[in-house]
Length: 263
Ligand SMILES: [Zn+2]
Image (cartoon, rainbow, N blue to C red; front, side, top):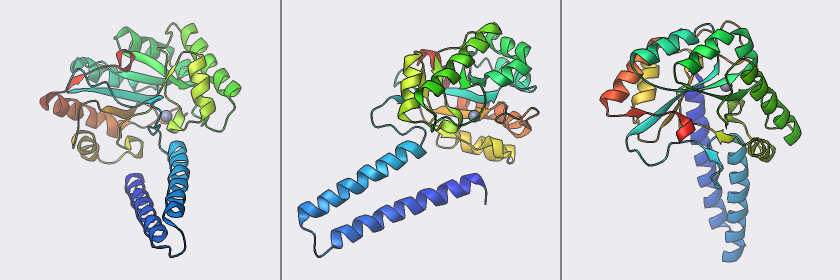
């Protein structure tokens, strides 16, 4: 089973478990109405805490950005994670052909390998933002450790000639209260996304086009990858083959393309 199918099965199981839980509690012969409400509220709180950890965009307090503002209408953002790689130049070439500006959440360790590519991304008017030094998850790290990771990434990218926009997307989108505090301390907005299409699984390009454009809606922040974590020679051919058609279809649907630094 592919990652996408698994994710849907997981979501289905969570909904079923939640419904079964609510049904069980409401059917409890012993608890009073207030008792049932208390049990449901506790279950909702615990569920919310799990969701906060597991779902990158989920934050009831609105501290995690994951879609564009309401205006302008019919706008979307194309974002790339895990670069730069040897193939990022081809991404930039495709974006240039369609006159689309995108946001690149880069890893400083990958930028060290491809400094010219990093500079080219910035020179072409794209927004360079922060994904970390390496692709290790940070949601279990202390505030000081995340702060160190972020300031090292900012320092290294700046030393390569590209001071990044203060936008941070944590690896795998995993976050904690410490992640949020560290990002805020360094003046960074924490970003997730509204649509991921599992392009790193490298399915048939037509599948990627369908996932990216079916039900596309205003404010969409699309997550793509011009690298694969810390891999030195990532294979992104499937995404590269899909990208022109994704841009064509979104534009034909009336979408304009924004970068996240203005959002
Ligand atoms: Zn990533």
